[in-house]
Image (tube, rainbow, N blue to C red; front, top):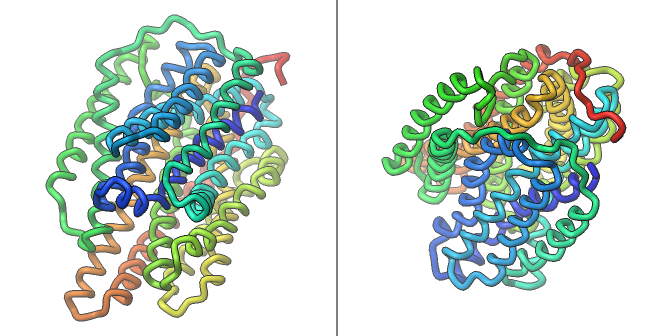
Length: 471
């Protein structure tokens, strides 16, 4: 059952990044600008940010089997809508429906795993989750690139996904058992718009700022993008205040009592720092490879592929080591390796070999592999079992927010430096490389925080609540 959930989650997360290579294709097909076509990816991330905070309540309200069927049905329907989309608006609708299903799958997988697997084996099983999170996004652009090379049309990407998702749904209907039965919990209606405006506004504003900066080549503030960020911050503050009040009577949409565990809080902070670095780094590397080194899109995608595969292949070993030695012996060296890799990126220029870039990215990926499995396992293992669903939802939510922050931060720094260099008379390629260099210096500096945090995460104490008779 866990393997089925892992494979289904892999498929839906793969879909999140597979569209990143089809932007030019979409722009041509629908006669729109590339900036508008970027909404095929932005709408997906935005929906994820809005839906994930609700999954903590949803996982308590509905039984495991019901949630799986709803999630995979939404994903499959969204995929079919995208295949037949006559206009770009309908394609966006399909992506939104897909994302609503995707948002539920990762918290469902994590919660089910924590309920079924004894604590002494949770590291090995959580490694499968880490593998899913790391390999699927890395494979997405590569697989998407090959599909577009073979079939030359964006619809082929969804035609590839449709039979896989429908098969997962049919097999899941037969095999998924109820780990949790669901219980009557009242949905707090005012919390939903607050979560949507709070998390959605921040992700929309941050990703929009990054996209505009990347396309316009300027870090100048864009008024229309600061408005949703400001609204998001205000709504988020109101959302947090409401959850604190509601959790006294166990009615919170996203129960923040999970943060009472210092271990969980340190793990969440560590995740934010590393996701900011990872998302920003991937964005910068693609710009650097394509514009700084002049590589074609498909070759640039292949350069980062070994790193994603290394992260996935290492996950089972990291899981076994975690079960034996705990988090700190893995996380501290992992954080050091991530930081060292980022500092190495700061030395890259227009003459750097793409093989050296690939090698350093592999080292970065090895460092992240040593961080993610212990982080998830120690973090969730430190909260009470009744809060597993809320802990999973918090991890998913901060992952989306950190991705938006990382992309916006790195691209904005790059664009600002690039604009200043261009004004000073530096040619476009060298100006962009200078901007990327500065952004990597900031990213490498931020990564030093994760080294300090890695020392603070401990092996969780044994907690009761694992479902007996299922493992």
